[in-house]
Structure formats: structure tokens, C-alpha cells
Image: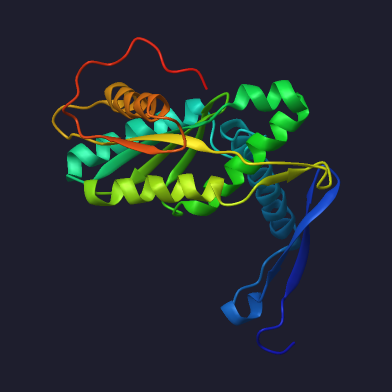
Length: 235
């Protein structure tokens, strides 16, 4: 056998389906691997892949492909701990689809779900790989932005808003098309004052102001407005 050719190739099976192939040039390593060892390795790898898929399913909102709220809040707690300990910048953006009830009432809940999926896809394309996208609930999303300073937060949130409104959403093979917008509220983490709950409240307060100001806009909480509204403007 020439150097570089695999000494063995082992199929990795998951629930009766081929999900991968394990190949190794054991000869190049100068070792001999027994067949039983290879089989055990394949079984362990298959189990690890299966466990990984179950884990990803548990932390992912399947409709939007964003992270679940429970996982997102855990990640926010971790990010805040790191920001405090290592004096890192951190920010949060809350977004809500404008007049989403009208979409459901006009086109039905199936189209509403398709709209949620498309809005989430546009948001995912507008953020960095280091950001954590979360479906916070219903038609509301939360984006955790690590290493983001105050000067960069407004433009980042505006980029998300523009990504959603960039083009009409076409559904049902193009027979249904409509423009969807989002309102966004953003807040920079205050290292000596904020915890996860207060940071979310500040971003949500800014989102309320965006709704009150006419929707389809971004508002940033600078930490000076202390009186939160009792309820958010509808839609």
C-alpha cells in the first residue's frame, strides 16, 4: 500500500443510514489497528454524532433555526460573566416583527410560520458568526452581540432591520407577496450595573420606543432612561 492510502475505511451508521465514512492511513502512523478496535471506534463516533444531533435539536427552534429561548438566556448569562470578568464589550438587540397579527389574520398561520422562517433566515444572514441568534418568543428575536461597542451597536441593529425589509417576502410559489418589517431595540451592557434580566429589559424598553415611534426603526437604550413602560405597543 502506498503512503497516504487509507489502511481502512469504516462506514458510520446512524439509525440504519450511512452518515459518514471513517478512513485512516494507519501505515503512515507506524501503528497497527485491530479490526475490533476499528469497529469500537466507529460505534463510539456514531453515538457521539447521534448525541450531538439530539443536543442541537434540544437547543434549536426548528421553525427559525435559531437557538431556543432557554439556551439563549443561558448563553447571555455566560456572556455577561465573561464581559465582567475580562472587561469585554457586550450588547443585545431585541427585534419584533411589525403587524405580525395582520399576516396571520390575512393569510393564515401556515403563511405566518413561513414568514417567521424567512425573517429569521434574513436575520441570520445579517449577523456575524460570533453573534448568538435566539427566537425569544412568538415573533420576537434576540441577538447577543459579543465584542460590540456602543458606537457599533446602532449600525449593527440597523443592518438587521434593513435585511428584513430589503425585499418583499414571496410565498406559495409567488402567489403571495408582501413586505415585512421589524422594529429593533438595542442596549449596551453596563458592566457595573447590568445582569441578564436588566439588559433584556433595557433592550425591550428600546424596542417599545421603536414601536411607539412608528415601527420599522431602531432605538438604542443608552442606560439613562430608567422608567420602563408597563406594556408594549401592539404589533
